[in-house]
Image (cartoon, rainbow, N blue to C red; front, side):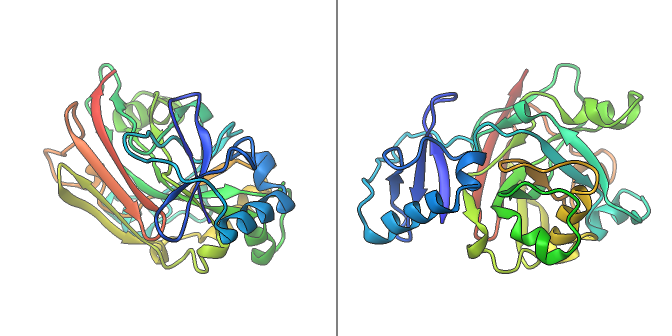
Length: 285
């Protein structure tokens, strides 16, 4: 299933994109697309049954904003330097273990919402990523099979980063990762049954129509199952939590001088195979 949330910020309603590309209203079946729903197998079965029976009312998508596909996200866990190509282009060694950091849940916005370039920024960068959406509480998972069984689905994420704040201003990466609007998510949550192999997905990103990133999750240093298993050793993952799994090569930081960092007025478009496409116009904060 392709689950999404549509409507104004803070007033989104649950919806489903059917096999014919028609937007369907889920409001009569579920309150929202959130951790409670994702952890409730019977509720998800009811949604599947209604979708299969063709009884869900259609929504007019014209002019309708698409919000983040998951509401009330508890935390956004991010994996840094998780593609061989990205580590190489930035001149960093391949990590021996996953690099883990957190983004605040309030950085999450819709897939086509405005991204704000922070005041004083000179190195705002792009990062297309595969996002994992957790569907079951995960603690101390031992096997890859257990890890994948705790995944509700996947989505497109844009891990926007301010490199000067992240690297040159002291402390941890948090300052360069948590500016407002720095995590567009969606358009859809695609349930795990529709993504049989998360390690064979193409990821692409364009800036002002120019292709900048063209990678594949097969280049991940730590694959999806290992990432979920590893993170569950250090923190409890709850339904509705998000894990951004890293970005392939092609970011601005890895390019020759002058590095083409993002500026107000730029347009970024990105996609992951089968998971949909995003488009953001950048403006000044």
